[in-house]
Length: 284
Ligand SMILES: Nc1ncnc2c1ncn2[C@@H]1O[C@H](COP(=O)(O)OP(=O)(O)OP(=O)(O)O)[C@@H](O)[C@H]1O
Ligand SMILES: [Mg+2]
Image (cartoon, rainbow, N blue to C red):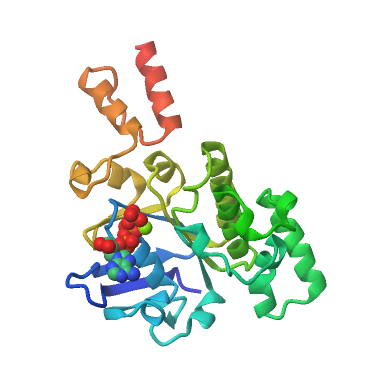
């Protein structure tokens, strides 16, 4: 088993009828088992990249593509979306796009992908019950998915992908419909899934969250991969704001404390580090 599970090589994509490349010679690798975050301003190409990782580009969205993507050795261009979905699962930015619109109930929606894989009925039932509990949607299992709140649809969308146990999980801004506590709960679940060995690729706009969960961060700007590295190296890069990304507030607090001579510690990028820094500053 190699260290790299996913490789994007000199990858460019232009949507049909568009003039400019939405992804422009993007290069990066994702380590097996890592928690990998993708950040960038609106329109920088994050969702397009997610769609490319799971083969929706080029198999569903047409356009001009250069370079390539390999998912655990599979060439995305040469593999079908079905084959790829055995390995890699995507939770869409818009959870309403995740619904099959053929399932009459939430339980059927969760069963949808399992049914396609010929999972036996009893196993399926157990998986549905477990997932419904985990996602806190057990009270709406018999409801029609189109009658749910946005947050409930998002939980169903997440559950319908988690239930397939993909080796690589791609989450495109998957908590937009949830309240802050609900979002935190989902990230804790994702962290547990990651802890069980699943490679996780997350698009998120909450930089405090990215700083605390990510092993590695990729910054997209105008379709280019402008920076890749540890959360610390990315969030302490003075050029970050040029790319339309604000670092976590803790970075600003650190800079302020340092400027005023209260600390000479390295920049805090997470809440815990920031608390530690302020505590020390108060002592001194
Ligand atoms: N299906 C499509 N056809 C043509 N152009 C598209 C399509 N989807 C996205 N684009 C364009 O590609 C660019 C990147 O869009 P994308 O959705 O990948 O950005 P994003 O980083 O996910 O943005 P956001 O933060 O708003 O979700 C935008 O200019 C967008 O208008
Ligand atoms: Mg997007």
